Length: 100
Image (cartoon, rainbow, N blue to C red; front, side):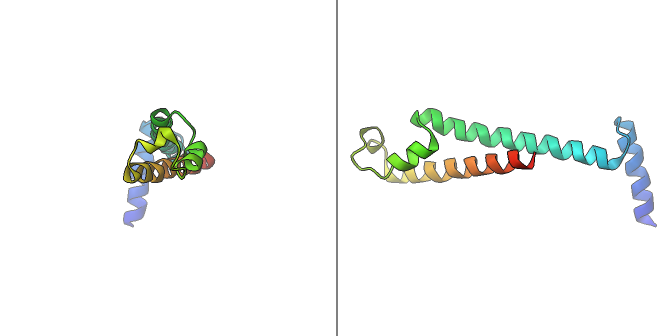
C-alpha cells in the first residue's frame, strides 16, 4: 500500500513540475545528468590537451620517447598520473556521449 501512496505523491510532484508523467520526467533528468557528466569529462580532457598542447593519442605516443624534449622536462609520475586521468576522462566522455 505504501508504494501506491508514494507513486501518487510522486505523480503529483512531477505534475506540479510541469511533466505529464514520471517516465518523461525521469528520462529528461537522466539526459541532463548525462549531459553534465559528458561536459565535465570533456573539460577535464580539454585541460590536459591545453597543458600538453597535443591530443591524447599524440601524448600517449610521445610520452614513451625519452628523447622527446617537450615531455622530458616533466617527471615520470606526473606524466603517468596525467595519462591515467586524461585517458579516464576521454573514456568517460565517450561513454556518456554514447549514452545520450
